[in-house]
Length: 342
Image (cartoon, rainbow, N blue to C red; front, top):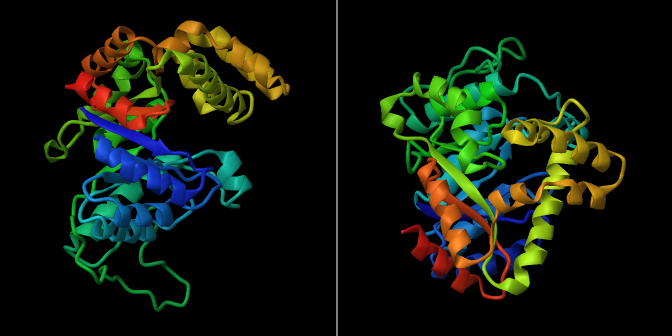
């Protein structure tokens, strides 16, 4: 099991990088950089590649609509070279609010596009032949000037098998992830519910999975607080985070996070939280999240409780303990977590 965290995309990137170098020394294995409607993740990851030595770096996520597939492949190859083979490409569809509202690009065919992007990236990195593709992304482009021709990436990528992770929520997307990707970045998982809620889609994907991909890697964890003075602030932070996604990321009837929350046993709470949040009652939406949900999707509490939750994650297939620490001593927290993970 590896220890990972994600950088807050609204914070100062230089201060974040300073913190990451300390986390690396404390035992952190993987750091992910998010990209919403913030600074781009690629610039941040390039800087982190230069500031770190052994830490794995990854995008969580690069939206599939904001770059051409070939540029995504080029970017991943560049970051992998700069980090000496420490980069993982995290991809995701994001949502209509960001893609259409900020990028001005139509949000359509997310699963088909993700599949083709994965295939195109791997073609580029292997350099076995000049790049061509049929489908949603015809390469070379038919028509146009008529001057387009198949090409290979000039550089020899550091690795032809850069790990690809997908932030999948829906069943068909998760099935495709289990078939093609190296890793799965779920938004939130209750370990005890993984098999019941996600098992059928995962098994359908595994049935088509190429053996050379190896086992699917999966993140899971949550906000962590080990000191009593941070317990309540950490729970409130968790409530704020999950109320935002479950209640506010999308419209009624079109919120992927809300759907997954409902499927994990909280259908009534899912509707209540969304109604309150969309009515502008954010504090009430936060309070409406069940206490047992917050307890199960975080690592907040006594040593015994946190160790129990880590064990539950490990037993249910989580390979990367993904945490957001709330503490005055991140190094001490990471050192403890690393001990409990072993």
